[in-house]
Length: 310
Ligand SMILES: [Zn+2]
Ligand SMILES: [Zn+2]
Image: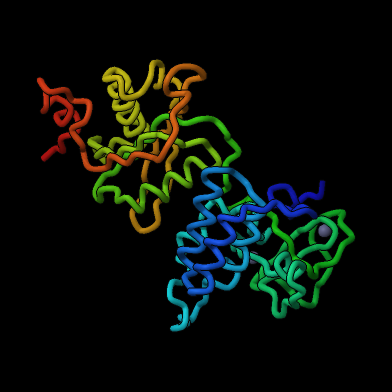
């Protein structure tokens, strides 16, 4: 396999139809509601994993839906958070030198016989080493990859985003996700974004997503923050909100949340057997210190753990 061609999705020669999705996306696209159309493909990818039909529908939206200059004719443009969503990482092309990534029009072009002019970058036709327009020296078309004799040119195909935030390859079933915040509480929108980053391609059916305030002192450092979060996870486990030994199935992910600072996300995988291994249905978001699980007789006990210092 070529050195720079490991994480990208390559469209199969055959069709893989999903008529309901295609109809919904095409209707939204006719109404120029590109943001909603893209969300429909995103929901499909979250629920069903990689799908060539969802990618085929998403690619032109990602390619054209996000323009630098606002087009008043577009009812709903593609949002930046959608553009960078890790579920679309496999169809992105990333510069091998900097972290710029984009959605190349070449794969779409090959399907609808378009000619792509003025591409955002060029790619080695042998090893797929890719340079964006800023990193490219048009005088040097030779591939910079050592030992490669290829030339940079078109078509530019997806490479995935090996240097950006990659979509992780886990496919395990999840049970619980906790987001620790410090000064700004987690909104529903942010929680969904963080869930996509922390749990790409994982089965999140029926899971619970919570947010909790981080009570550790900022001077305590990340190690203590992690420990505090794990204490909360073990308390949830004791309360029966996470199944047995959940603490040992929890991994901690520090994530830079755009515009909101760093978050610690505690992702607990489901056990192999038992009720939590069969969770299904929509994700439940409990983001505002809900009194669930506290019990009738001790309504204040759970809140006490999370009360902020004054
Ligand atoms: Zn670059
Ligand atoms: Zn090359």
